[in-house]
Length: 86
Image 1 (spheres, rainbow, N blue to C red):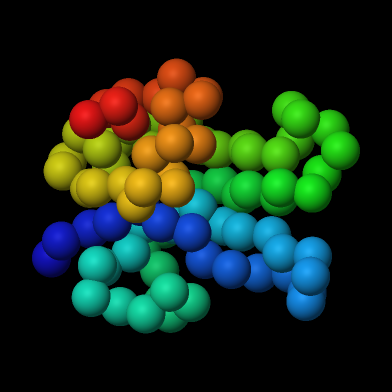
Image 2 (cartoon, rainbow, N blue to C red):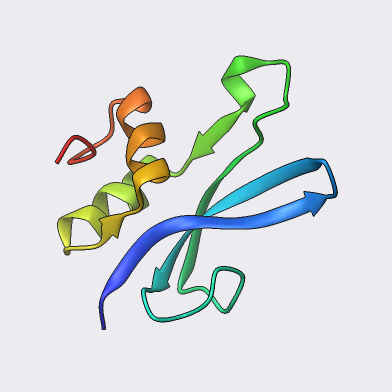
């Protein structure tokens, strides 16, 4: 099974929030997830609370070969996590 780290859309219309999830790459965007790793709330005025992630679990998934989506890669790079630059 090929695992991807990607976003799952939540929230309401025009006020989106996202959960960072580990999913099988063949599944649709909002389908069943393997594990939820954090969340991204881009409209939160507090910058510290916009992107909250379980660092240990993200590094575990990257270590076992999970590939982040482009958006997740950029967010992880801002946090300085793991192999986000590759």
